[in-house]
Length: 367
Image (tube, rainbow, N blue to C red; front, side):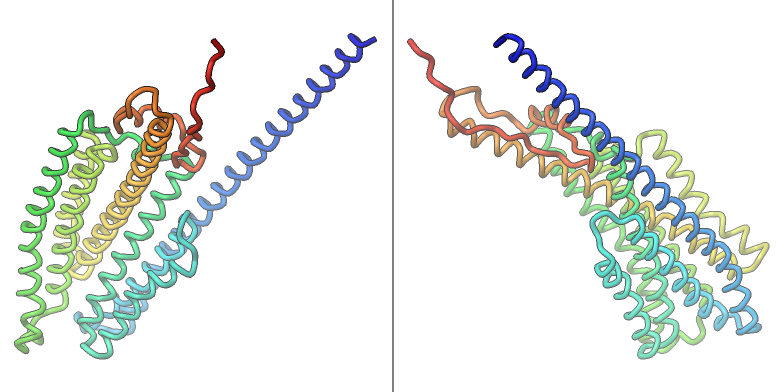
């Protein structure tokens, strides 16, 4: 009788465990289906926004041409203002759809600063200064959208570039890499002083000396676009090669990046000769915006990498404190030893979770 009762209890326990496992499996399947549905909805929303942008851009260009007539400078100023506002709105909506950590209110504040500053510059300093500010604001909006895209791809598991950053084997190698990073940053800063000085000489100084009236808007925007293209190229190369150490752009992908940069650099020349200077400036501007999106994306990947490193350091400190409180056990491990073990502790959101390490001393064995 007791044996049959024990068997009955075990069967009930097994049935209860099977029900719990089945419910957990259903819950995982439901979460996966919801995540896939949300991903499809985000993709559809971005495609709809892109389609609306593609339809609105020719309409804006035609409207500006009909309104301004034959005045080339006034036409280009109007085009830069209208297209900058249109692109800023597009990237703002894309950032809201794709962002993981940034809310709507924070996105509104981030995107409104540049537009308000451009409005102030247009009414106080003149339409040309306002045009330059709203142009730079559109590049900032593109970078924010690229950052949000990196966050979303990391959260969905589509991009693991932050996990592929090679770890340092020794502390000496890490110190050497840090020294090389500081030296590269100083050299890059000195190199980028050249376009800054050229921009100051060709744009700020004519306004300060009162000689800006004889300079065309086309030449101003061409110089500004090439200066911003130079800044974005060197900054993106610095992030991908020195901070991410080739995890985002390998050897083959870096050559593709160089070819794309060359196309952006030289494509406006034949476009200007065939369709006019304004068309060439717009093509160059779109190329600079695409590079700004990729720069924001690389910053998002680097942010994920820094977050992973912080979790690794937190886990290492937790383990070392636990070993010190025990008073016995193996010596404290290094960060390189922990990196391999923590890679398996990935959560669905892509973050590392430090395991719970007990700080209680081991139980004494009986003599």
